[in-house]
Amino acid sequence: MIKVLEVSLSEDLTEFAEFLWQNEIPHRILERDGAQQLWVSPTIDGEKILALYTMWQQGTDLNTIEVRHTRPRRAGGNVGLNRVWLTLFLILASLGITLLIGMGDNFEYFRLFTVTDLVQKGDQYYTTSLATTLSNFELWRLISPIFVHFSPVHILFNLLWVWIVGSRVEVLQGRIALLGLVLFSGVLSNLAQFYVSGPLFGGMSGVVFALLGYSWFWDRRNPRQAFGLPPALMGLMVGWLALGYTGVLESMGFGAIANTAHLVGLLAGLAFVPLGELLTGARRSR
Image (cartoon, rainbow, N blue to C red; front, side):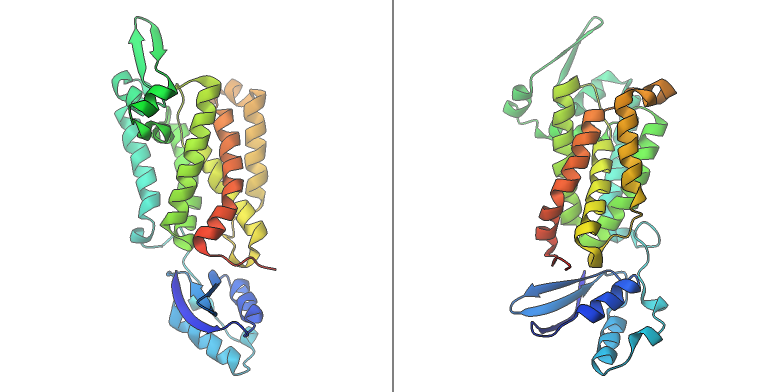
């Protein structure tokens, strides 16, 4: 985000902020150092926003002005790749590790990315404990299962949503917010799934559910700083979650579904919203 202007706390920016959101211009109004600061996405022209503010101050009716050239490019669309490099890292790391493990067929590499180490003796697999993982300082194992996928459909579905939602979070709220959400939801969903099914699982689905839950709940709490994703996506994800628990998806050939990781990821995304507001300094819309 880039700072466009700074005004006193006594100035009411509500009308100007509403105008910006009506024209799909993502922005944030922060209270810092005894003043109000207007920040906008780096994908739009801050000088034009400042000019609009000046006109508004002079009494111009902004609704009579065409502002389409000021609107941002959509995250995940024409945004420069340097602005979404964390999202790209998540995608490329998933592709690279999935190819490395042969979608689960290469056991010696696969065991490097499970929550606990695996030892194969004959046709049996034995696993170490979570305490062993922690005592050996193999802390990467707490997050690494999110990069493991077992089929082309599995990885394409997950990475598509990572690109659509993750890039939007990174552009509009910054890499720290996205990284915090990924680590928070990834570790929680991995541990929850591990306690339910053991270490033989993987996938970015828990993080995907977290991203969708986070963006949905964020928009409910901060409508003037919304991501703008269709609210119906939340219904779609809840429906998909329900189908997973009924066993319908497995019967349709989707393979074993990490339902616990999905559920915990969704809850983690919802729970992360207050933390996201703290990280981004968002001021709650009233």
